[in-house]
Length: 150
Image 1 (cartoon, one colour):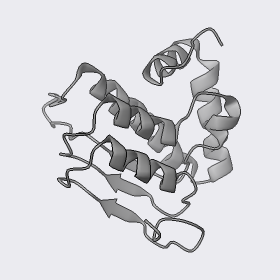
Image 2 (image 1 turned 90 degrees about the vertical axis):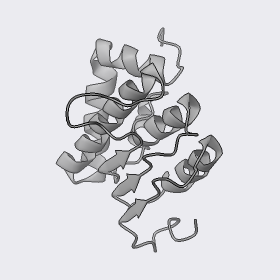
Image 3 (image 1 turned 30 degrees about the horizontal axis):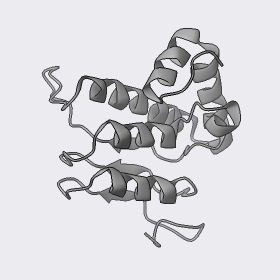
């Protein structure tokens, strides 16, 4: 965990597939990665104990919609965060119906990170995409258990 904290980390990728990581493990990772500015890849495939709560934490890590400030403070460094492996034939072997939605929205946020290549620009783009499009905002609010009347 200490390798990922602070400004001295040089780790770029972390592959934790098939490691029996659960929601508690995800919470620890998310807490550490909020301030990490070097890790670009996090792979968590085949950790079947990650449920809705863990998936929501990972989505909030890369695009927290609770406020514009929270979105701007989300992780803008991760460019590849995978929880679920997507079948190349278009079939999704997800454990629940929302897993696909979580992974797709995580992919949107990490793609913005990759395209922008700049932490401030990525944060601004996420605000524009996530807060100003009412349909996207409603979907993300539902996934993040937020009050959509805000």
